[in-house]
Amino acid sequence: MQPESNIEKIVERIFLTHRITRADQRIFMMTLLSKDSLSSKEQMLIDRVFEALRQGLLRVVD
Image (cartoon, rainbow, N blue to C red; front, side, top):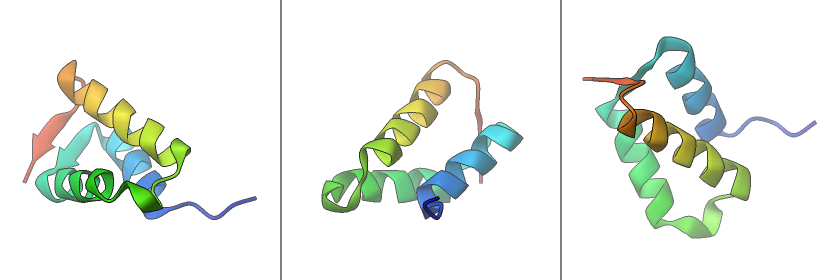
């Protein structure tokens, strides 16, 4: 079993609370811009978060 990445932990928390912080968003954007360290699973998780944001399923908090 592989250890969870920071991205996986953040995404899990976001979907448990239905909230995303501005800091979470910055982490995702920085991670996406440095794609060399991003696994396909992490990419899928980040895409899932941004899609939920687009659909209004998550609330952005500071």
